[in-house]
Image (cartoon, rainbow, N blue to C red):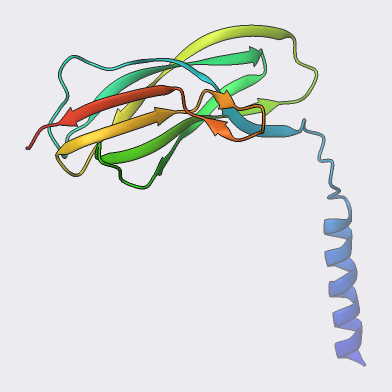
Length: 146
């Protein structure tokens, strides 16, 4: 009987601790998505394979609540032009009551290829009318040997 009482008290205590935790914890909702790239500035000299080359990537925010999170880089199927990467600017938006104000912002993409050769970097610029992603900012670079 003592065991059942202990289990009951433990269960009641656990319930009291977690019952105050609802879905709305008092904070604003965070929305994640991509922001369109408007420009890419590639340095005149590309560093060799195994070294970082920094590129300035400019993107467009549509309100004051959006902020940069990271670059989403995905390798695509290699083509005749070499290795292909699709790159998007991932962002977060805190809340939904945000003043509309378009602003271009710039972040540094640290490109660190493992191999020398040709690379095609496709930057996400939005979606087509049918909802498929479009990559209209295309950068082709040649990475030299180490």
